[in-house]
Image (cartoon, rainbow, N blue to C red; front, top):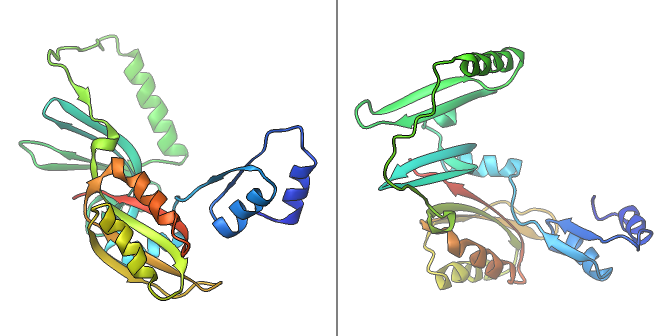
Length: 239
């Protein structure tokens, strides 16, 4: 729940239960938990409607992608929200339509699209599965002789979109930029948007690619700055 007195009063009356306070704001959610000596968890990610607006201004939109790539006897398998270019095929799928983009050696890029929700789409999917399962000719195929390894997610490189909510004070962008520089993460673009309430300002950063394993320490270092209140981030899928 939100950090209202009613929520805290109810939690105080449940002293026999283990309490974990979860929030995305250091000055309200986490501060309230600390005052009551509760364990707390800061959620510094997620997607907000403003992220769609800022992404659009930079030529992107946000899509949830499931990705499978095969490279040199290794497979990259992952699923997460990503920024994709506005002029890409996947970016232009609207409503309940789902799409698949397949990169082939001989035919180039193939695109497949169809409805992913609704009564007709669901019924079609169920019928298709029943026909597949009832086909007695289906046999398990296992003719792969070489060993294929799954690529560790933390070893991948990504560009990142960062939304950083910071105090509107002198030098705040310089202090944030220095954290990126100390972690050897180059910044492709950085911009300050219109002020929010409570003397806070959103700062939007697009990074150059860097190792996923360095992401969490970078975020932790940014949150240690007194001027930083909140951080959201989204990976950028290369085209």
